Length: 228
Image (cartoon, rainbow, N blue to C red; front, side, top):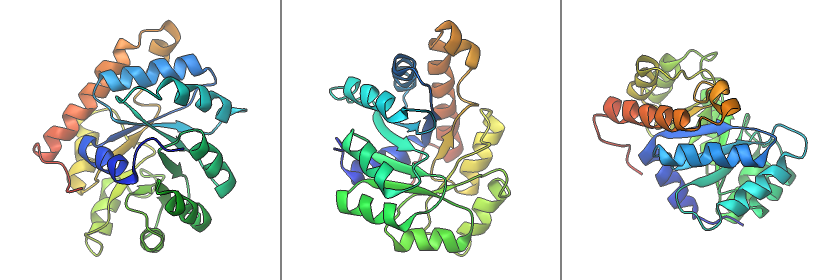
């Protein structure tokens, strides 16, 4: 079951501003990458359910971090309530999906687990909020119009908390543009993780990049995080 309360998870997402998104079929690699992110200051880490027996990998990663308070683990690419329940039982502290599933929202509400569904329209964002969602994942963020989409949505929905994911680049200009448009945090996958660094075991490069992205976020916010 979830180790952290929904409120603590959401607050950690808002305060840090970055949720790394990662998958690998070897639990040892996932643990090393998650630890590297934690060393860089990351608080929440999303493991994506994308490979065969991915839940078995997550089970080992979750057991490793059971007594480690540096990182909050969540599960992504969750499409239906059965898979959400499986990952929550294995220790997922938040659930992320590429789309909105009302049954997943209800399940997460029953278990007091944060749910961040992928939304691509004002209607989807409003429907998600009606189901109790606090942070909506805007996906695929770049294809939806980039930072301009965030800014335009927040004009009529200033209370919305939006986390762009998909196409966010690991550059100060790009990160800053999302944050200044009003994104409460950003989800970042492949652009955060250097494949060669992972292959060679040079996880220090991942720590440096995570720390750099967090610094760019803090600078773009003017040092003031969104209100939790």
